[in-house]
Image (cartoon, rainbow, N blue to C red; front, side, top):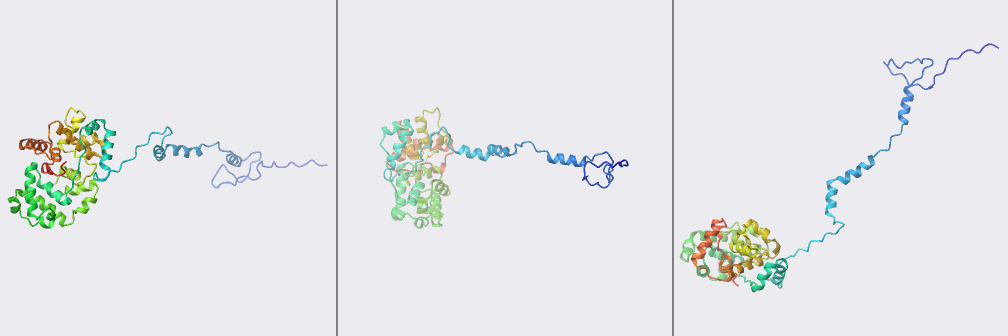
Length: 344
């Protein structure tokens, strides 16, 4: 038999990777005894399994650290169960049946110092005038006057209008400054009366609108009237509309009362009054009324305090109070604007 012929060695990879053009390392002719590493390398890389990834955990971490989630978590009740806030009291007009009694009960429970003052004085009484317009007219006429002088001017003014029922915008506007001056109304006050009547006539203000406005809106609208400042509006809301939660922060008597009640070293500023009387909500009108009683008991009549009790202030005392109010820049146009209305 003849010797078998030697055969050429077969390449290990029967399917070599096709050569790339312009690549000196990849030749179309296979070199005997050599192996092509490109295909195994690719196969090896494609078959390697990735290590376990933590990517699925990342969304949970992101959600946990999200500010929105924190806000949601913080809004939920804690596991320890913090005590819930007491239900908010929705106060009504102090002339509604049982509302004044509810106010006094509330003030007793939240302020022991005020409770002792309540025990020492009878509860307040509230009287109303025919219309808000009449009450605002009276407010302007009593500006910077003692009760006796204010009563006299108011009586003569009502006569000019044909009685209290005749005090209406259409009857006030025709009154000339000269006519008003003859009954003791200054030229400035005459302009205030006319401005109020014009705003009623133009529909900017109305009795029904005033009765239905919330406290904030009412304050904004009424202070648009010339001659009516914040003190006047507060007194009107308390004594005529009987709003339950009015705090006249600019009233000197209420501020003095708060100073005495809490034994403060100095007179609280208007900006401090809100914080000091916060516990009285929503019956700060009644709390303020007792501050006037406290001042009276100490023999120091105040503007609205004396007004509410119907006391006549001597002119030297009145002038001193006006100077104090004006030195503190507290609505100089509206000091003593209510006079004796809302007497108890």
